[in-house]
Image 1 (cartoon, rainbow, N blue to C red):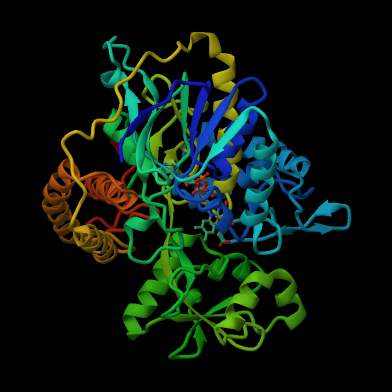
Image 2 (tube, helix red, strand yellow):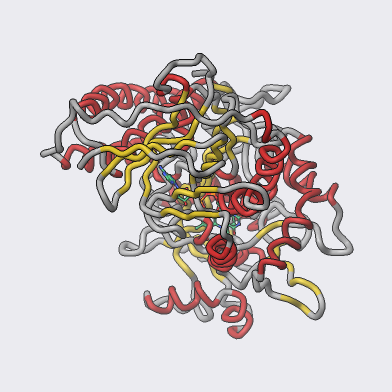
Length: 531
Ligand code: FAD
Ligand code: SIN
């Protein structure tokens, strides 16, 4: 164990190797040397898990206005229209870029095949069967690996941003100069400095007991940026996907919304009847917040463990062709979706809030950009429209990179910074504390800060967070960092941001639904937290 300082051989540091980070890196590499760090394996983020696809107006009968309207209806008016227009109008270019990179999107004749998902008034989702993210991540990684200007370093868990207060000779610049990262292969903490830093670290879904997101979605980048002094916004807007597989062994397998898009019906297993007609005229294709709340209500009202999602009325070949990954996975668990229903429950799925950015991905902190799920760009508002998030990663990944390239001459060379100080810490002999606290946070967030909220439950969660902060702070101050400890600290930080934001919003809008404030307040306003 020890510490190590790196001279900045790279111009730009990118934290994260998902859709957002790799898109930024590939654009930056046209002019600059880029270092990309990832926690664990390079493809361990949410991107590789994406199923449904990417939304873009590509059909002759569709228009940008339609997609903009659908996005703002789903977002319950909290979206920033300027951002929505920017992203949606950039979508055809983003898809063309992915086609050029070799992503094998499904086609229909000469055109890309378009599927449909909840909240979309038209078919506009390009996809690679039901494993779009896997294909996208593979294509981006291949291009990055082949690019001589990009260095990819897996197994680096970033701990904190390097800022002005870490400069060897304090300059008062207020700049971000890179990040300290734990190299999990050597156990050393490295200081990676660069002229500009792009945070692309994904969401904070693992704050919740049940989540479709991968293990590493612990909100590290949001917490790092917040600790460094950046504002975060709309953290109460946590999206729950209506249809996560209910299975006691496989806890976070998503059943894509495209199953409903292609005719799947939600059925109450007790009554044997479709129930969405009691909740919304758009039935199974209502926006996610509405469908998730309807399932939650049905489960609570009838004392169910799950509801059924049934597409067995469609021809078996159609189901197998459209959903080969899901079909195989379910068959392995003894469920044949071509002949019977799939048991499903809602689970946390997407972090709509995050680090506040402008249209170029700039944060409040000079030298720090942020892109992808760790941000709040104004696109999603109070509820993300399905398949708009990968799109956001591509559009903002490129926008941030272009802005850095355009302003390059204004970015100074990083000064010498202090190495990570481990002189007062020892190896932990009580790893059980980390596990216990991790489980506790995820459980009370699920129970108290879930799909339906009350002020009392939020206050209970706030109280638990306060107690845990003392314990985790004490532990962090005394023991050598590990990925688990870094993640626990960040989960707790994000849980606090979510609960604080939820307590500030005295209305029900989109994903924030509270029994104490059932109405909406106009005009819509973001919940912005200032460090
Ligand atoms: P990610 O892809 O999550 O990548 C985060 C990166 O940051 C990873 O490389 C990770 O290792 C790294 N990282 C994190 N913390 C650290 C740290 N401390 N130090 C160093 N590196 C770190 N969206 C759609 O638009 N369409 C879909 O069909 C779709 N399906 C989905 C299905 C599932 C099951 C899930 C979970 C999400 C889905 N989404 C979908 C959402 C979408 O996949 C994500 O929003 C998007 O992939 C996020 O990309 P990203 O680049 O921001 O982050
Ligand atoms: C899904 O395939 O249902 C997920 C789509 C998304 O999260 O955008």
